[in-house]
Length: 435
Image 1 (tube, rainbow, N blue to C red):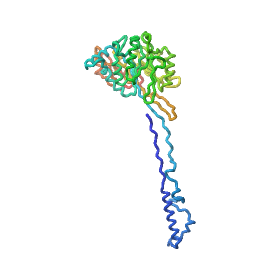
Image 2 (cartoon, rainbow, N blue to C red):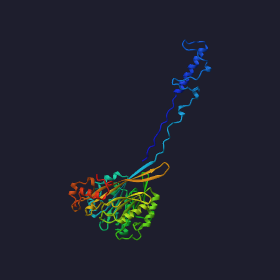
Image 3 (tube, rainbow, N blue to C red):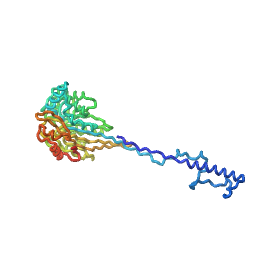
Image 4 (cartoon, one colour):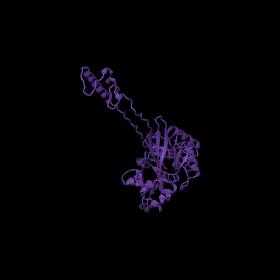
């Protein structure tokens, strides 16, 4: 937001000196006339003729101007003693969130279909799945998420090993505040050319302020969006597509992490077009909290090429948040894995994810030079809940997840105490928001 410049008021000059001058001159003239006519005073000797009288003085001993009143300087024309205010820099901020893997297994969309039918509606009702966490996203100017599956209104929904999710799921994510959707992951080619074309058509049908990243027609095909006067470029890459090749004749395709020259060029182009370069990357080893040497080495390359923040997904569990120093001296935050957002997986640690939060500040000097800072990094935990036999699946913020809910969880051991202790071992305390 803009800082307001200070406003100064000019000091007003005094007109008392002019008034005193006029009164004393009038007294002197009257006295001169009196003595000229022969008058006398009993205790005061006769005054000298007016022509030789010295200038009259005020009671404070200051000389009174002998200039006629009309020639005295006007107080309003006197220069102000206050300095002109210095122009202040313009400061704008954007608060951003990023959520992990939105992994829709069949139990999730089948329950959504039943809820819609019970309400007499067509399609799928995913509101209950997200409603207990939805309030968090009102705290941010921009919300991002990794969409782990195809989205389509045309294809039959399916789950592991080749996922396809009803489009109503993405529409519900949009409704609760998500606008940026990362599509580069190992399931994007699950339905071959037909699935890729269908998901592209679906995303094209979404509102104009929704955007995707991770499928490219060419190297220049990435979104650049502006929020509160700060421009963002969004890039997304994946290590793999589960052995599936880019479909023949595909309109768009992923960029693999092995294509380092392409990624470097793309990040450099993004830096020329935007204030901030956000990179989402699908990498690492599933179901481990340990960051691999390969992840750390590639994070350093991304920072050196120009990324401002790196957001990792794919392991389905939470991994640490660290900062790497780029070759040009920038401190680049790296969240190696946000874990799952929603899923019906069956490991205790798969039930836990974090919502990454960060604040981008742009300071623009009066001369036009600007600086970008990324700070106030946070990790807000979420817990995926379901009862026995995967009933009543829904997502909670950890702060709202109780021992009573844990007692009815379909997986034993998903307690608030366990989740807290696990996260405290993985995420640095300066980032973790447990309350």
